[in-house]
Length: 136
Picture (cartoon, rainbow, N blue to C red):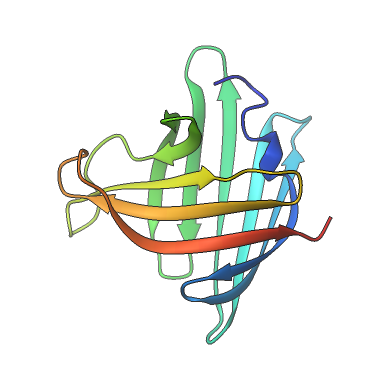
């Protein structure tokens, strides 16, 4: 995965998630070296979070996610089959699970996103999905 591996994600997106409708805005900031994500779920209830992602030749992709529920997760960029993904390196949280988000069916103005968890890093259960449609 190179420095442009997540360029497809840049822009503002309408998202229909399994939890409701949302907007997700991803921008390139800090001289182009950081992707900043601002996620806002609008219905059925308000909820928000954000991430910062960066790439360097030594470490590859890294992401930090925080949200209004005080979740804090650190991810690394990787591939799941042919699909880009951010995944925790080990088990996290009180539920002691691996977590990952996988981007699939990527096209110019649409993509699908899956939030998955695993007790062992091998068997994954889908917890949330989102169908993205580009606004700009």
